Image (cartoon, rainbow, N blue to C red; front, side, top):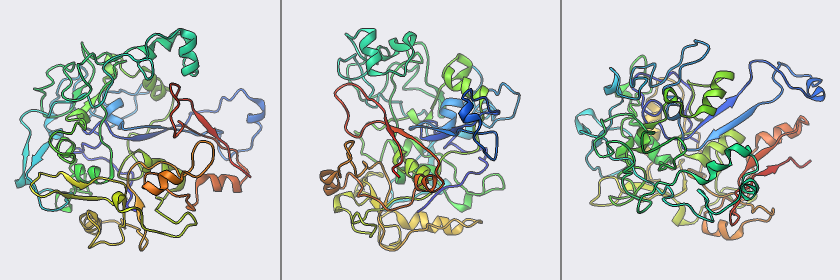
Length: 449
């Protein structure tokens, strides 16, 4: 399956420096071992590291959180501030134009690269939107209202008592949950580039709009062609079509985030204090984004398998998913980039017939280093978020599988299998696939032997 590689980000990169609200992963690895558990300290490991904790921040990129972070240690870092794209006060810096975004006219088929002469820079950034953020407190979902501290603690037992109030704050106060976000300063007249999300009307604990993070969208947003390659940017990806794709793929009335993908939190204004503390005390990866193009589901799968999973008969044999779940990112006739069918699976081995596949494979073939699609014949690989094939009670989700919204049981080998083989205990924490009436409690999954 198509995957991306950790590589040095060029000056004109926006997937990290400008498209700052997409998914990322961070491994928190302590510089030294200080485990107070004597039993753990007795474990014989090849390095002083005895635990590895991986935290996946859904729909958040490095610069969305760490865009203005300055390492406490004095080490170098590559972010919006170090590249002088923004200043410490969140305002545009001298290299702000390196992160400008573009629009383009409609094409007849899916594309991932646009000729410079066919692109026009935005005069102002498309307004960031509410994107489904809650506008009022609720008794059924956060931000909550009408609950005592004891009840809030039962809903989210991991929070410290002094922080329980955060479950009750942050609604937008807007009349609805879609459309431009009026809380953001100059929301309809933002300069064409990254902007600070927080401000007088958007404190750090505010709910804000989410952004799209999906397979074909991310390839298209990245604007990749080998003709743009340089020594600092061997991929030729300019990453300058983020708002364009967000505002077109779902049609002119859909709210998928507008310009929100260009937003960043400002640690110089004391935003994201916990993440700053983690960065000060642990190792952060400013030169790595994610293992595969696309959204959260695929990143979880790659984390566990180093591969993608595919639609099968439940016994490891490839099969064809329901037709309604086979993606077609080609634009609908008469539209500017409104996808025909934005769903979950593609047969990327069928290069010339499967919609959307040819531009990606053709681009990979032009790269100066090996980057094969690695698609097995007649395999429909998962592209976007798909529910597990098992319900929280352990039974097979036959209804979801029939609809194509849940993946059949997979035989793809996982890191859990490898750890089991070595007798190493492990745990995986996730929210239930069937949401309780109020409490999003975590599940802890242990290996079976």
